[in-house]
Length: 162
Image (cartoon, rainbow, N blue to C red; front, top):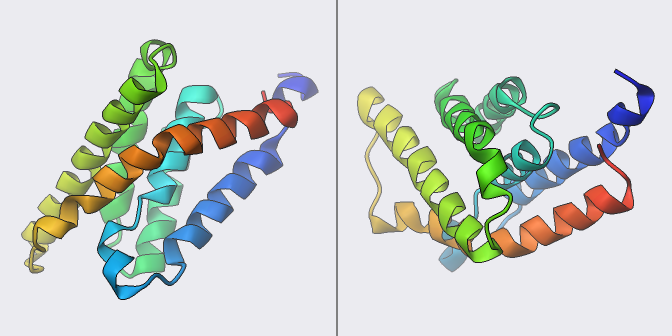
């Protein structure tokens, strides 16, 4: 693989670092339940934009890091992120041509699946299951998707990440 194709690794890495920072950023009490799934959003974008560089292996590592960061069962977030990455990689050619609103709906569905898998794992280990507010991150992430997409696309183009 030529050097030109590997350009911009730091942009991808920095976007994931910012996503992790946003994931642990303190929020007011009323907004904690609605925290968007930042890491999943950034992962979905990079899987759609550069499927040959960001894939299931990166999703697994990100999930394990997120498990350690949040103190959850090791592999809980990793399972969800791997499933999201796999579905995104399988459909990225079709989804990239969708308008942003249709992409946002698909992202919302992917995040509902991610939350459902996490809920399933929590049920298996006997953790109490939350209320209806458990599903709010899918909604807030869906609403934020057009802006996340535009910001990351502009960064990718500005720094010629390919």
